[in-house]
Image 1 (cartoon, rainbow, N blue to C red):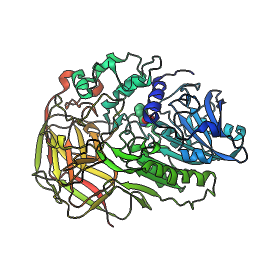
Image 2 (tube, rainbow, N blue to C red):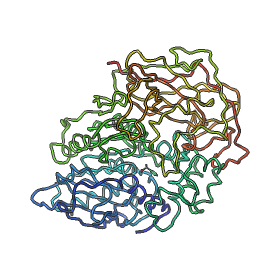
Image 3 (tube, rainbow, N blue to C red):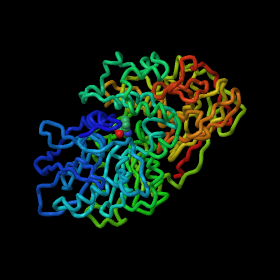
Image 4 (spheres, rainbow, N blue to C red):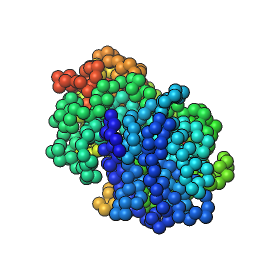
Length: 617
Ligand code: PG9
């Protein structure tokens, strides 16, 4: 196996496979029913990709091929070193399919040069390759060389493998009949490492360690970071100060960290790596899956589904559940995120009644559009129940605007309100009450926001107690009218469901959680203010000048129940989820100096509003 220009992903393989999927308990004994073969498949340019093939021992019938291409190793794990770390759900295994894993070009046991989120080349010249051509060449080989295959191929994957699933749709191989991009990365400027241009400092460990070519660390090394001397991530980054002070931790050969520092704006480096722009005239059936509280990839699933829906007439559906990153692939009986409980056996029901039905229909069945699956299978995270829609976003909605008014009120009309607060980079707003040194943050998206509501640098606006249920479904638009005494600022909007004082408690939780007045975060998003008019061409603010800052928060499907309140919080720091904005304009915040970071006074005006889509029925 060769390393490449960015061995980070090689290291990532170990972590993510263990961290994201490692805790699965294998209930299905694959070894009794499958034989395993490892092959190197030659691509059109001669590079060989390591591919593991699990074929049912029952050779009396034919099977489709279900493949996952991954930068996280397909290396086997466990005492028998038989099964790869991640696999399609057990129902698909038990039914019998030919299961294939491939280390993508340049990863783990495959040859070649890796390119992080390799750019798609629409009209490849002789000798040019990308992940679409690698997928095509792989499918071509599998169909011709794997015994008992029925000539139909499905591709699936979660997160980075989700990106390769989306990418497989561009291979245009006729045998590819179905793909399921799950929590797929859409674009690293809006998923994972950045949100609307703000750098996710909480991802630093993932970024920094990836670029550091060392011997393979132990799985534990991804959870404890003794070299940093603390598990308190907030204090560590606050003490570290400017981002340039972080270089010393992981050596100078840190390719991905350098790429982040060299490309602070949405330039060609990031643009060409985004996959969403290529999703038109898609032919295979697609099922996009994601978690409504997925802290890593939320832009990706929604944009992948919506873009395909807009530009193609294939079978295309969306499943969004009350899950954090990858939960739907685990066997968790009790589905809870942080303090909020959503129900039992949600993942297994999805795996059995949705995912397995999808692949069976398009890989074994008629493959036509008659499959009994909804266009959008969406969990209502307030009512805590599933609902099917024949379109997403739903059509039976009306716009609902809430203006940010005086006295912490959300109002139906604009007002002359001017609400100011001091934003101090020395005392930034924590993103959670429980901030540990993590590889990536995963469980904060339903956290109680009372700690923030009681800070002077967090503006709070809320409705009166709701007299009836209010279901908000679809994207959320934030239209802020703001000013700052400085020349740079970040803007964070949080949408919160305030539980009533007599809310039921959660007996199931070991500490018998008190949910009285719980401020459940439902959705949150940030924009780095310099990108308010263009992600490619940033601009400073004019000091003390009222300025429009508009951006979207990802879709929700949430009923704010009678007796609850809708609350909006607005703040300018969100640490260390995102890095600190110096609040004085510098061309590249990765190069900011200590003296650039200044306390400033920000103002929000009463004609700012947050716009939702309210479900009519
Ligand atoms: N999208 C997730 C991720 C990518 C790169 C670094 C850290 C996390 C994932 O593939 O899990």
